[in-house]
Length: 437
Image (cartoon, rainbow, N blue to C red; front, side):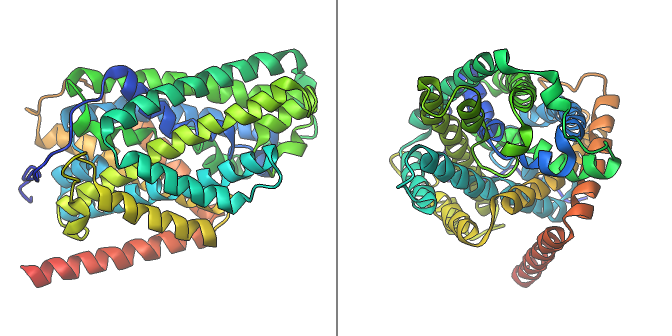
C-alpha cells in the first residue's frame, strides 16, 4: 500500500476564515440553483409522480451520503476533498479518479447555472442576450473570487440567505393555488424506467453540496464547524427542494414548465399574472439563487484545481496563490476557460447530466474510502463519526450504484464521453509518473 504524505503547503497558504454560518451559506449556495431550475426536466421523462419517486430516492441517498461524507471531511480537512480521501485510502490511481470526477462535477456546474442566469435575465428583459449574460457572469465572479476568501464567504452568506428567504416567500405565494389534482393530472404510469431516467434531474436538487470539502482548509475550527455546516445545509435543502417542486407542480398545469430554465417565475406569472408585482420582484430576486450557486461553485472548482496541481496531478503553476489575497488565481481562470467552452458547445440538460456523472463517481470513491480508512487507520482522529455505521454508508453506497447505473443506461453517449475522457486523462497521468520516476 502506498504511503500517504500530507500535502506540502506552498507559501503563502490559504486563510482560515470560514465560520459555521458562512460554511452553511457556501454549502446551501453551492446547491440552491438546483431548486430554481433543472429539476423540471425530470417531469418531461417521468411526470410529476414518477419524478417525486425519483426525488425521494435521491433525498434518502443524499441524507445518508452526507452523514457519511462528513466523517471524512472533518477527519481530513484538506482542499482536495474526495481526491485527498481516495489517495489516502487507496493510493494515487484512485486519487486521480476521484479528483477527475470532482473536477467534472464542479467545472460543469457553472455553465449550466450560467445558462439559467441568462434565461432569467432574458425573461426580465427580452433585449438581453442569454449567452451575453452567461459570459458576463463568468467574468464578474472570477473577478470577485480573486479578492480573497473572507469577502467571498461574506458575500455567500448574504446572497444565500436572500435566496432561502425568497424560496420560502415563493412557497407562501404559491400555496393558495396548490391543488393535488393538478399535481397528479396528465401523468404517465409510474415505471422503473421513467424513475431511473429522471434520477439525474432529481440529483440536481442536491448535487455539489459535497463542495464544502473544497474549502475545508479555510474553515475555522474544522473539527466542529464542518459537521454543523453540512448537517444544517442538507436539512435546509431537503425542505426547499421538496416544497418548491411539489407546490410548483400543483399550482398549474405542470406540462407548461418542463422545458424552460426559469420554472419558478413562470409559475408565478401563470398563477398571479405576468404583470403582478410579486412576479416581477421574484424574477428579479431569483437571480440571487443562481448567483449564489455560481459563486460557490467557482470557489469549489478553483480549490479542486489548486489541490490537484499542488500534488502535481495538474500543471504546478495552477497551484500558485496570489501573494496579497491568497487565492488560487490561475486555477480560477483555468476552470473558467473550460466552463466557457462547455457553455458554447453544450445544452443545459446535457451539462447537468455530465456534472452529475462526475458527482456519482466521486460519491462512490468517497464511500469506498470511508470503509477503507476505517480498516487501515482506526486511530485516525474522527471528530464526527457516521451514525449507525456501517449501515448508513452501505445504504448510500447501494443507492449511489443504482443512480450511476440508471444515468449510464439512459445517457450512454455522455457516459462514454465521460469514460473516454477519464481513460485518456488517467493514461496521461500514469505515463507522466513513469517517465518522471
